[in-house]
Image (cartoon, rainbow, N blue to C red):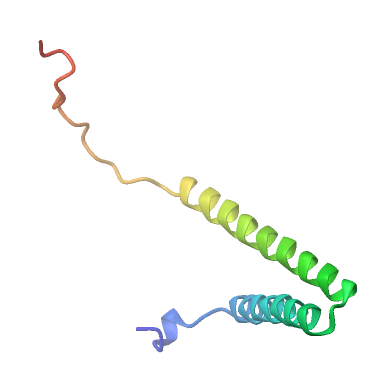
Length: 88
């Protein structure tokens, strides 16, 4: 359950979530302003917002991938030869 004290979101996660929300707000606001006002500046802001969103997604993906790959893996016995590569 998310409301348990041991599972509370850290402060940095709340700020990151709020910043991500603001990034989308700027992106979609610039797109709608660009369409409504036919503004070239709003189109540039929308493009920058899109690139920033893409950069955030890639950064989070790389950081989480590296964190998962560096964790301690469980000790398991190797599988016996259960494939049929040698069967003819």
